[in-house]
Length: 507
Ligand SMILES: NC(=O)c1ncn([C@@H]2O[C@H](COP(=O)(O)O)[C@@H](O)[C@H]2O)c1NC=O
View 1 (tube, rainbow, N blue to C red):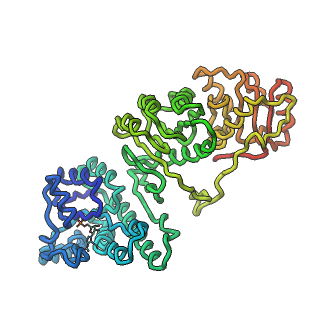
View 2 (view 1 turned 120 degrees about the vertical axis):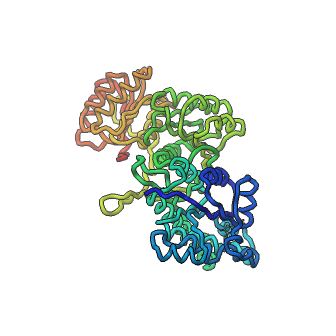
View 3 (view 1 turned 60 degrees about the vertical axis):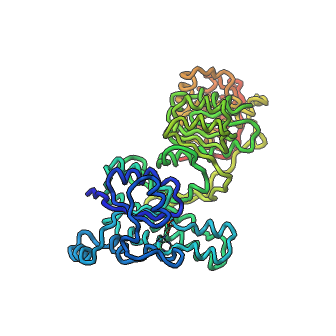
């Protein structure tokens, strides 16, 4: 059942990003209570707010060590609205209900990281705020808890869409996130007292509730520390599907970091529908877009260079969901911020985990990330015809994309530009036919193009079809007992084939 919010206690250390949430609460006539600095901030917005001291009848004391720690506040949060005895006791002691708690804790981690003296660090151990979070999360049956600035936008949207009310599922999800936040916070304090600069498992306890999962009827949350990876410069909250595509984009672009030219990739549903390298970022983007401008609509884009204004002006013409870049020139950012919901992420240089883990049956499976990709040095030519230098470059480029595309896949490319791929097909022949058809549909001449395959060819059919389409060179792992049939087919068609010995399935 949906429950309306009648009153809220707001006590936040950093006041930024809070305004839209306060405004939506004001629109729904929510009675606001607040602590000193937060109260002042809300008053400056011209929104009515009551000092928490008027609730407690007690002033803030001991330099802020005690502000909200009072039975009226905790009773207001914790009494069970469905228990007549609790409700009667609340009335007897004149304890008004508090249906929403918004807290941004004292920045303990930041203070430690700044190298502050122990006395300052100790003062940044939040007591009242963390107690408010725990109380509100415990009573999620009646109370919504907002435990991070990263949640303000999602909660503002939720309350706008649900007319100021929340469901039990909403409240339970935010309660889980709040316990994640308090556990993370205490883990940091624990680590500090043990003398560790950083606790090892701290990041894993950060939980960001998402608007929903893969589809609106599925709940979703992200367990991890997005702020450590990206500065979000613009746009709405990343959705579950955005996160999946951002992950795929970041992994693909890692292949192009060390390379000289500018690179751009456009992804849809984790697969690249455009990848290109060029001397300038604008050219790389336009060539990536040309690969499949239809699929690019609503995609996730990643580049390996700071976005300049010329590229931004081209990008601005396209509807896309997310753009990831190592940086944005100020005038480029101004152009791209012209569309409200578009998400702009500045990627920080970070190390990613070594292991990939996913849930499966009643457990999880893990594996090392697929970190290897073969270049010309690993290519072993097995045909009479040897690939030219340009074909070799194109094969290496195609192979990088192939590795990051759902199996079964065939990637068709020329040096520095993806022409088309067949993705996630149940047969390799289907993947190839799909790729050929797509390339032709978008006006690419396949004469002289190259082909990469994520796994070996069990039959010569793919080589024969590719040869007919004009493909001149092929890279594949090899390893089929019938490799010789594919090699013979290539020789007959005058094509070059190189083997790598490494398979790149992506299920
Ligand atoms: N002591 C208390 O009762 C207490 N209650 C809330 N706080 C914290 O005080 C901060 C907000 O203070 P202000 O609104 O005065 O800027 C928040 O970070 C909140 O977590 C408290 N401070 C620390 O424990």
